Length: 104
Image (cartoon, rainbow, N blue to C red; front, side, top):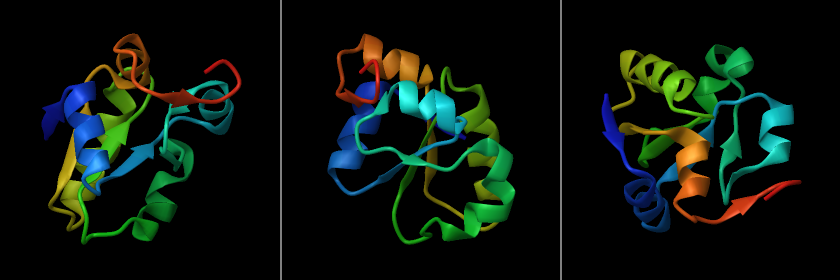
């Protein structure tokens, strides 16, 4: 699976990609990339069909490991335009990109 930098991921989102955060709800509430849609890994297989196949998906988690697993699952199940955000939410925030949440 292709990995993108936080800046590349943000540009993709600005151009219409969906940012999918696979962390758990409490992590998401603390801080998340602006505009990210929560779909926890614990529910991911059951809910992955909710994700559109007709637009790019940028997967994100805390550091990039869980989102890579979720993204690979999508690729294995018929999705074609899926990338992983390298470094995850930590890298997104460290690069000064917009975040939302309790500590954001």
